[in-house]
Image (cartoon, rainbow, N blue to C red; front, side, top):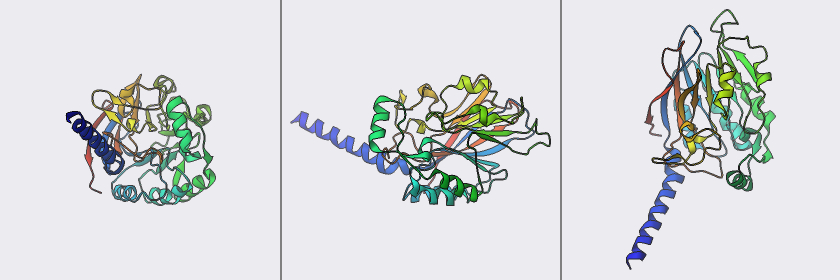
Length: 307
C-alpha cells in the first residue's frame, strides 16, 4: 500500500511538472539585463535589445503581446539572432512585430536553421539522439527576407553594416552578421569583406561553437542564441541539452573570452516539437554595450513580466 501511494505521488508530481513546463513557464516572459565591454573606444555606450529564437508559427499571442510591450522601451539597437520562425505561418506575425520597433540606430537580424527549414518531428528525434542537424522542408526564405526588409529590418546574411557613429569608417562600429554556423551556412570571410582591419566589430551569430575562433577575428562583442539556455535546467547541474560544443555554464548569459565579450540569449520561444521549458524562462535582454572596457561582461538582473 505504501509503495502504491509513493508511486502515485511521484506520478502526480511528474504530471504537474510536465504541465508547468508545457503551459506555464513557456509564458513566463522575463526582461533581463546584462553589460558587455568593447575592446575599442566607440565614443558612447549603446543600449541594445537582444532577441533570439522567437520561433514564430501560428498562434503565439502571448509572445506577441510581450514583444509589443517591449516596443515602448527605448533602445539604440534591436539585434535579433536567428530562428525567428518555425514555418511560413510565422512570417506575418514576425514581420508585423519586428517592424514595430523603432530603435535609434535600427533593427538588425540574422538567420538560423529554422528560418530556412520547417523541421519535422523525426528530424528533431534524430538530432537530439545522434547529434548534428538534419534539414526539413524548405521555408519560403526569400519571402521572409523580402518582407523583413520591407518592414525596415536590416537582414545580415553573411554581410556587414556600418552603424554611422563616427565620420571615419575605420573607427566606426561595424555589425557583422553570419548565417547559421551549426547548419554549415556561415561565411566569415564574406561577412567581413569591406570591414576595415582594426575597426570595432560586433558579431551577430545564431550559434557560438568555439569562442577562441571568434576572438581571433578580433570581434569586440558577440550576440548569439540557439541554445535556448538549455531549455531545461537542473539545479546544481545546469543546462541539460545545449546542442553546442560550449560548456554548459556558457549556455546562457554574459562572459568574456580572450578580450571578446559574449552574450548568449535564452530565447523567447521553443521549437514547435519541443514546446516546454523548465527553470529556464523565455527572455528578452537589454544589454548595455560599454565604451572601451568600462565594465566586465556580466548578467545583471531579470524581472518577470505580467503578460
